[in-house]
Length: 392
Image (cartoon, rainbow, N blue to C red; front, side):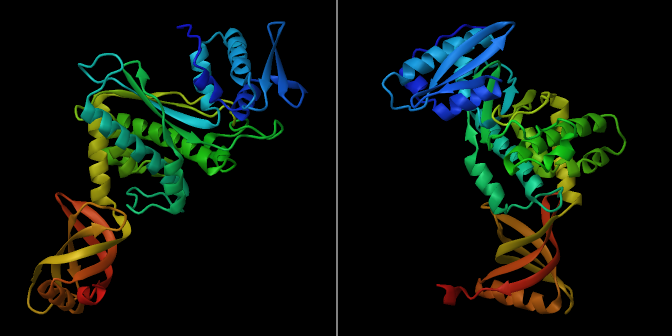
């Protein structure tokens, strides 16, 4: 352990009385005498009683000095660096998720720019995939591009933490409501993760589901390396949070070169649990399987009931029967342009041909599936043509 003493007054003053008190309570300190200016906390360790004083008002002139004294006491009790303790106090009401990556040819605490950007984007994708899995009424192997409001709200509240050495470690922190009463049953006390999940707030359920989904994906990848029906290992874990989206996010954490990485979790001390969530380490061969699984899930299992908006760029049919059209457009909830192939019944095909001639925008709903390099819309319905001139 590197024994670091914190002397930065601004960093110390930034810790609120609420964070300090929640941290002490989570570490089994007992609150005692309370005055208009401070609260005294005590804890007995190996027969020795320790005491610390927490001010109740950060505007007090000696606030940073009192917090500094508390850090010194906590460092002695916990046998940890003051800096580590200060960082834990800062995230006392946050579930933290860490990715320790092992990029080749990089110094300690360093990662290539492209790999770093891809990793952070993929970590967001991982969190959103877990949140959608909790929010959705039924699990989906291919999640829709347009996410529910509660998933988007959750994603906006998640924060990026500081990177640190250890190869390269980056983290995100998700706020969770604190547990306010000691009498309330803690998670994992008697039940399994799945049974306890429903008792927790949405934010904590996402952290649990993330752990479940990552473990399910790891187990599926391991099984697929020695199985004749590799995809079955993944489809069997859809209820636990496996999706094409989650697999793609895990692959992205390995960067362009597909390096190994480890994912670990630390649940918020302010909402205590009875167990820890063990880390999972993915190897390079896992990432190859995950990439293939994501592609096959998208090819075999459609993204259901999506809305496509765009322009007809190609038409083909035989005689006066139904025909095939190609639309260059976007799926609701996405920004990237796609080319999507659709079979239309005769009446809709005629309308599509007219829209193509007049370069009018069309919309249509259906189930999106990828086959090879092409995307197809199955079970298409609700074809409509927009009057661009009237819209203008």
